[in-house]
Amino acid sequence: MYRSHVLVCGGTGCTSSGSQQIFDLLKEEIAKNGLSEEVSVVQTGCHGLCALGPIMIVYPEATFYSMVKPEYIPEIVSEHLLKGRVVTKYVYQDTVTEEGVKPLIDTDFYKKQHRIALRNCGVINPENIEEYIGTRGYEALGKVLTEMTPDDVIKCILDSGLRGRGGGGFPTGRKWQLAKDLVKGGQKYVCCNADEGDPGAFMDRSVLEGDPHVVLEAMAIAGYAIGANQGYIYVRAEYPIAVDRLNIAIKQAREYGLLGKNIFDTGFDFDIELRLGAGAFVCGEETALMTSIEGNRGEPRPRPPFPAEKGLFEKPTILNNVETYANIPQIILNGAEWFASMGTEKSKGTKVFALGGKIKNTGLVEIPMGTTLREVVEEIGGGIPNGKKFKAAQTGGPSGGCIPASHFDVPIDYDNLIAIGSMMGSGGLIVMDEDNCMVDIAKFFLEFTVDESCGKCTPCRIGTKRLYEMLDKITKGQATLEDLDKLEELCYYIKENSLCGLGQTAPNPVLSTLRYFKDEYIAHVVDKRCPAGVCKDLLSFSIDPAKCKGCTLCARQCPAGAISGTVKEPHVIDTNKCVKCGACMEKCKFGAISKK
Image (cartoon, rainbow, N blue to C red; front, side, top):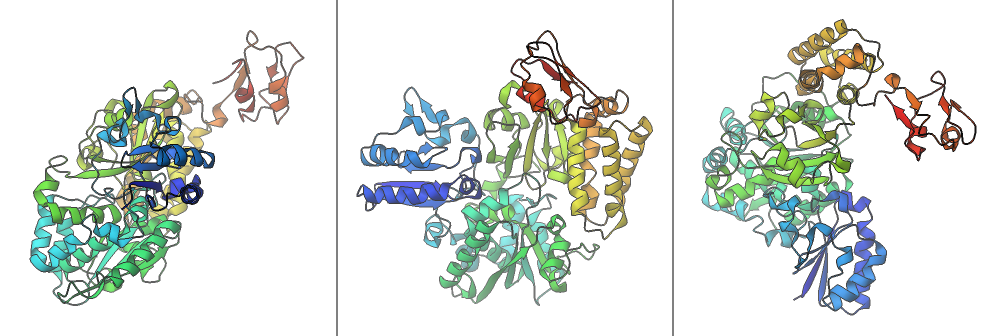
């Protein structure tokens, strides 16, 4: 038995910060101090506070060390692990109080969270099946196969109120029911959508890196429910850690008899294979994903027929995303009523969000449905840095919309977000402050959609390109008010006529910013001005002669030679030469340069 366990985050975020080196040094230093038989070092998945990596937590005290550097390791080992003295200067400061160091779960970031999908992330070694089994892993599968009929399983999922966490919010149990009942018998498939393509979204990646067995178990449960014996996980090739851990998990599950033939000696067969995506955003759409698994170019198909009737290889298929599956074993073990007791009337349970943008605590959070946007941003997220004001939050990525400050207290659930012109999406939540230009934000997402359109249907292939050109025209101060009317008209045409969800939702960032921030569009068009000072073509830089000390630093930084003046005399900017790079303003020590 070990007296201490040190958990080191091995998720992508911390790995990019150097956590592998911390892990290796820690093991070396522990061995050097003769503690190898007393202290265990475990590499886990994501803990959630991604901006604080590399992260390590020492148990049983639950001491949270953040932004750990290699040079900290000898002192932490000799003082904390050997002598039992917490090295407070390296501890996450939000956990440090006058009474001592409090557990991470009591911090503002964690205390309003309720982790179901993420319950094992950052807690277990994802490459050790026995650690998953030790947290009641595969117990739900055993219960299903030995105590429940397929109809019992589907009723449990229906009664729980679980809706798809991939964006559309379709009731999961209903999808399974359709696949079971529309076609009786024959080959059926269970698919997992791990093709997470939204900018700023990394929820599914974190589950696969931190708790891969939960997805395997849930897919086997789904296979039993609908009568399928084969599953496919379609995962982004850009997620190498997730792919490696999935391969390890599948191999281990087969060795333990939890995948393959005659699982739990019940006569039920189910196996899983991986398929790697090549980075096409459109392959997150269910029919395009299945087309890609089949070995063809990832393009969507017309619906109906829906996948539950004719999906992968033209056989009945269900497709859920990683987070949806991550809830299934806990619903089976704890009951439908337990899950349905959380959330709102029409949106049950919890939702995982990837917090990013202009916010203090960037990272991964799991909150009960119905938590307000204000609670997420100000309490869990720690607020906007540098004293700036909250302006908007983008949910749903390129398919979603911008939520303004006037809806800061809206409870987050599927229906509320749609009502205010956004959508849940897979769970990316990007926070913006007063320095963000909303026209530029809409343009950013449209540029992404244009690049990712598969080109199969004309409204999406050509329509999104025309939308982008109109937005570009607006940000350059070349548009008219008539162009704004055309912009809105084209948005609705694309929504109504595109073949798949990518095109149908592509105009959402434009429509939501037009709805809530039309004054910014008008300022760009009528006043030829960007209120946030972002759109370069509409900017002009000037030097305040009362503040300028004539230090010449700005002139030396200017790449275009647009600044002139003598030493100790006020300088001036030639606006005809200025390329609006902002280098002068960035370097000025006296605040003499401004933009408008």
